[in-house]
Every structure is written in structure tokens, then in C-alpha cells.
Image 1 (tube, rainbow, N blue to C red):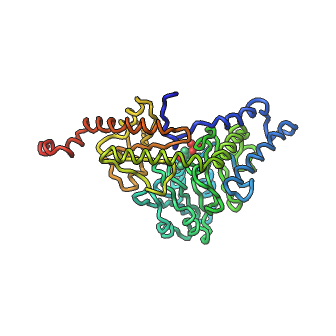
Image 2: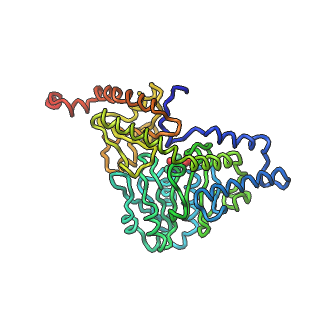
Image 3: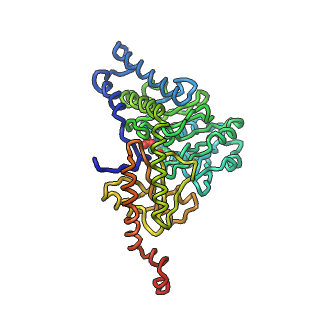
Length: 398
Ligand SMILES: *Cc1c(COP(=O)(O)O)cnc(C)c1O
């Protein structure tokens, strides 16, 4: 693992050692159920309340009770979207999202569609950005819910959430944002964004996996997904993941305190990577918005090659990266995000996503910049597509 160059921080991050330190006592000495009556339990309950206050304060919730702890981004998205649609179904059946959402949102919408809700999927421009004017045109008197991600996980594009909330607020339409990629990386404040729901997940900002939170505006009452005990004020039954929640609160605190410092270095390395790749490798497209993108995100399409082949060759040289494409039941489909941005299938197939993190070094980026051009060249030399395009003789022979 020591020589691994990890460039897939949009998929997950390593827990910070300070976060693990914070969690450890809650597995052993402070293992008590926060719902029990004895003193050691009440102490754990107090620590849980402090974590809730911390998360609420750091993300601009109006009250700690607006924070519900969940098992992660997927649950937070599902709970808010399905729960709100069910709660408001007598008011209207129309719900809106975008074509570039994470599957946790898209498939929740698909599920609601099969239950009789009407869905609108807003398009994006070539940078993966939703246009607020399209939202304005899509809203109807029976629209009850809109969900648009704060920043995209495949191409890093940052969405105009505040502009969209200004369209929705006067109409009384509930607005949710999947901020899983944004929290920790951008300055995120629920009230400033003007949203009624906001999802986050600890493992995307150097916290543990399997724990997240959903910020819910007091005025919205999503129907719970999980029924059981009265935890989380009847909104999410089940004994709280105390170590996970303590770790998440710590990770969030660190991410926000160190955000500028982390982003300065991450952005410097990311820009070095983008510049190097664009200079060294011809026929390369930088995907996503040129400026309005997450500080750690670099994504490309290399023409005439398969993204998956690039990933395998990078893996052989101990570089962990992703294509951002969905791999379903053995068949390789290009990413729904890239296709929505208007990239043709054959180009979208050549996608590679490199997402940086706080432990990457300049030396690692230099290594990748040395490694990648020969990999692409080798794959292109084997590609009949490339030969047909680049060599007039082969073209004629065809
Ligand atoms: C990772 C991710 C999720 C899912 O979060 P989990 O905690 O892994 O369930 C949802 N949305 C976005 C944008 C993500 O990047």
C-alpha cells in the first residue's frame, strides 16, 4: 500500500488518524446505549447531543434537531426524497431532479415514478451544469419537491443551488441538495444555500464509512423509512452508530478548520495534473466546468481509447483511479453524466476521473504525469479506431 498513488477520493477517503482516535473509546469504555437510563448511558447521550450541535453549527442548520444521523449519503438521499414525496402526495405528484445526479437520487426518483409520481429530469449544458431557467420552466402548480446535487461526483461541476432556491422558495416547493461531494470541500451553509434538505456522508471527508447525516428544515416532515424505536425523534429508528457519529463530527470539524489549507495544496496539484495531461497527451478533453468545479477534481476523456483499459494499466503501476462510468452486469456503459453533457458514446468511453486528496504529494503527481502519456500511446497504437483516423493509408484501405 505504501507505493499506492490514490487518486479516487470522490469514491472514498482514508479516515484521518485523529478521527479514529476520537472514535475508539466509543467501541470500548463508552459502549453504552444512549437510550438507557443509567449515568454511563446519559454521558454517551450527552456526547451524541454535542456531536449533533457541532454538525448543525458547522453546516448552518437553525437548530440541532434539524440534524438526523443516518447510515450515509444513500440513506440520506432516499429518506428525504421518498419521505417528502410520500408526505406531500396529497398536495401534488410532480417532482424534479437533474440528469446528472448520483444513483442514490436517480433511483429514488425512479422508484417514486413507479409509484405514480411524475418526474422531470432537468438537462445540463456541456459542462454538466443545470440552468436555473430550465428549473423555472419545469415547475408546475403540483410540483412538491426538487432535488439537485451541490457538486457532481463524476466531473466536479458545482451547481447554482442558491439561484435555484430563490426560484423555489416563493413557490413553497421543498428543495433538497445532495451535498455529499461538497461538504468538507466547499463552504457549505444550509441557510445560505436556502435548501430544506441536505445530505452528507462522513467517508467522503476523511471520516468513517457507513455514517452520514441529513439536515432537515423544521418545516418539512419526511415520512420515515425505518420504523422501530424512537431514536432521532422518531425520524430514524435503530440504536445510533455512536462511534461513527463521533467520528463524523470530528472529521467535519477538521475538514472545515483545515479547508483552506487543504484546498490550496490540492488545487495546486490538481492544476498541475490537468496542465500536464492537456500538454502531454493530444486528443484529450477536460470534462466538467473549467472553473466552477470541486478543488480536487480532474476528469478527462482520452479519444480512441477505453477508460477501463487505462484504469487497468494504471492499476498495474499502483495508481488507483476511476472512470466515473457505471459498470452494469458485465456490460460497459458509458457514464450517464458524460452522455448528458453531449459527449458522443465513443468519446465518453475514454473517460478517466482523477480525484485528489490531502495526502497526495507533488512527487506522486509527477509520477502520474510520466506514466500516463506512454499508457495512452500504447493503447492508441493498438486501437483500430485510432489507426483509421490518423493514418490516411489505412483510411483508404477501409
Ligand atoms: C458517494 C456519494 C453518495 C453515496 O454516499 P454513501 O455514503 O456512499 O451512501 C451519494 N451522492 C454523491 C454525490 C456521492 O458522491
